[in-house]
Image 1 (spheres, one colour):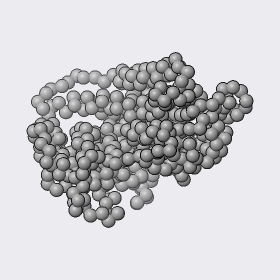
Image 2 (spheres, helix red, strand yellow):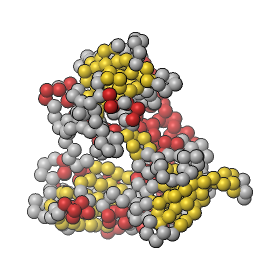
Image 3 (cartoon, rainbow, N blue to C red):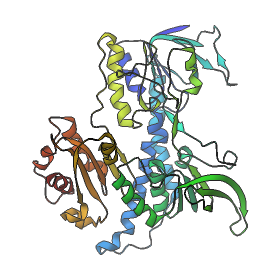
Image 4 (cartoon, one colour):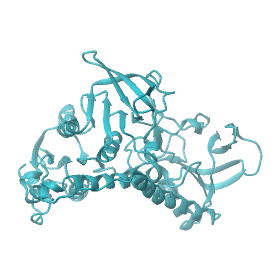
Length: 475
């Protein structure tokens, strides 16, 4: 049995901890990753999706050029080139990480699937899928400190008849399609659907979205969700309050291709609809990668949804074993995993002086069209918690830059404590929302975090950030 000081399971944000512990602290470290290195973000998430989405943004700019007196005609789309560019960038980065790790003995890479065979003993799976806990030299490893950062994968509904055999894909495969679908149906109406719909829709694919809730991106502030849903309703075929019941294949003789039929039922009036498409993408949430780890052989506990339970210091219910990122399920964002990695590194190395993670002003963004960015409480959450607040809302179009770019739908919304004037939440929909929200994050994370720190700051005129300043000044 090989002994290490630290074992990191997962080759995403855990890589930073493994490298730092090996290089700066001279610890003997193992990294276990059965898939491509770089984690979900680099290989199947934020990086490839945003590379694709930039192509969609460029196309959208071209299509809107006529608004600004520019005649653009005759442009064409090379779908395969768009996809190959993205995959070349992400694959080369992942390959480079692996190549550099293989050059070193510390940290030592185990490119295998693993599971626990004891409280702090880890064995690797054989090719036939069985766990191998024999006595072979490289078969079982152990360490006093272990970090689990295995992330999540797409969750697949089990209550849709015929779905399993339909040939559906998830966001993983959607990012690597070699042929552009003519019609895509999405099951789910969250941020993954809305980002991919923006990409494929901008390229000319007909988009259908089946959403069980009454709004798209329903976890956002309600006014944001309502505006976003209205915009998507005008661009795509959106079926709200519908639950998919069955999926089947059929041959389209006119197109000489195999198609997919989704039957869905309205949960309100019981109406049945049938939707045909040549591609079906399931984006109905994500589930943690914990099942194959055999955590029941340790004292590490998971919640009812399979996410690993950790304390404020990211330590699990088994002393010495930590977890971070999506597998914990607190904030499923790469920037959160990076934040947690800093604390996990410190708490693993300085075990007797652990610090709780400071999640103050944890933001997120949806890179669709329009963009959405959010931080803090939504208005519905403040009402549920009976927290006193004031709110303001200011439209993009009432600013100089908003008029210049003709953003008629975007707005900034602030929620502020009635007494202290601290910012309780900020929600932005519109052009560059993911960038504009950052001055709000700085205000919330540092100093007193009051709305006055934004309204009293001189903003460049007529920069787009004036819309944030004006929303702050009227509250």
